[in-house]
Picture 1 (tube, helix red, strand yellow):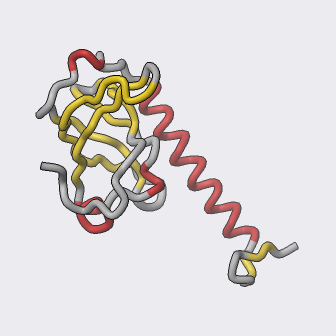
Picture 2: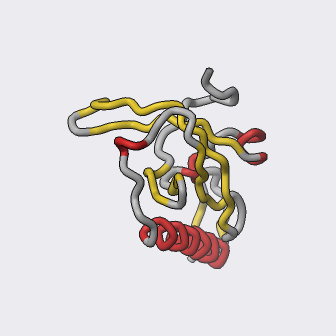
Length: 128
């Protein structure tokens, strides 16, 4: 059986399986890294702090990106807080935050503060 993409072109099943395996491997690697780390208390997160995030930009290699905390928004929803951060790396400067980065763990002092969840569409310039 041959799968068809949206344009009606044939998609080889082996390519689809390999792609799925790569995505699953990368997701499991990120999960393992973030679940092994301590959490950083939200009350201690301050504007100007620096940390890093981990993601996979290509293939299965974990890569770091820089994070600078801009602030914390409290009560954005029932029982929900949001950490605002500016991220930076050569790939982010070129393409912006891409959809596959969602869920990438973010660390300060080796402790997890959360995961990348939102970005402003078309945002290429940092917030000031």
